[in-house]
Length: 164
Image (cartoon, rainbow, N blue to C red; front, side):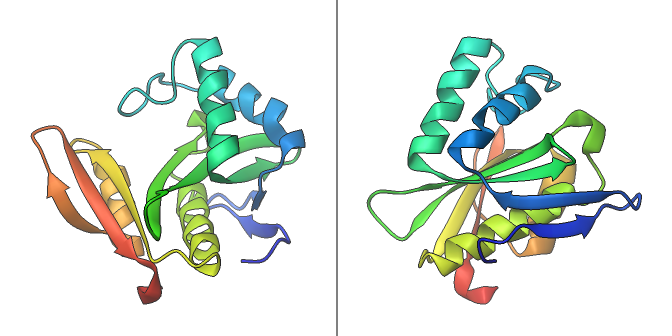
């Protein structure tokens, strides 16, 4: 993926665009999370309190690689890669607006974020997912993530970026 936005069609035939997030996008991203449901969706994220959510997003902006999915001038999805300062890997998170789920947008955000991370020289990406989030686990397995650890509540999944 380069700096140019990626244009796509979701499973229902509606267009969307994926691009790298910049500072001017922050208000639109906050707007998506203001109306996001359910809160928290997974592992306490996104934060339910609006101020804590804004602080979380600012932190992601400062330390992470952020991509957004847009439909027109509205943010409908957000993915972030948070580099590990000690190595060539990082953590991945993705959230899609409740009215745009199960349309392939999360899949495209995930693929685009992994491709961008690979271009920047990272070697692997990991994530945590609740054991009961079967839709997300299916998506991650389809893309190539593999289980690397688990506990009674969540799984850690990892993908080696050279395999993409």
